Length: 93
Image 1: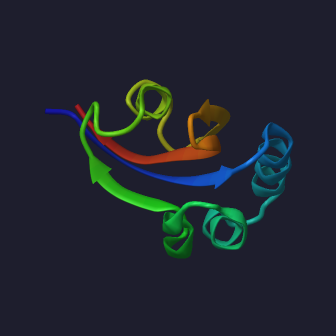
Image 2 (image 1 turned 90 degrees about the vertical axis):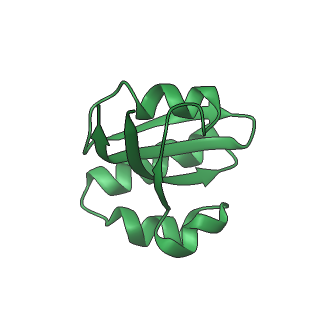
């Protein structure tokens, strides 16, 4: 069965998501940005969500994690919880 590891940053607005993504692309550390800005309890761990299988996350999140490139910051991705930046750190097929 496929598994993936990912980290994310959850915020309330698409604009904030774009702003944080620009900071990361300009060289800010994903972990530091997550710790400072993420609304998810995982923010305290730098956004780390650990390892999980298909279907364990909401559909929009799952679609990115199991189909988009590894090692790239994706987003904004809107879910029922808010707006996410998602970095897939590892994936096995």
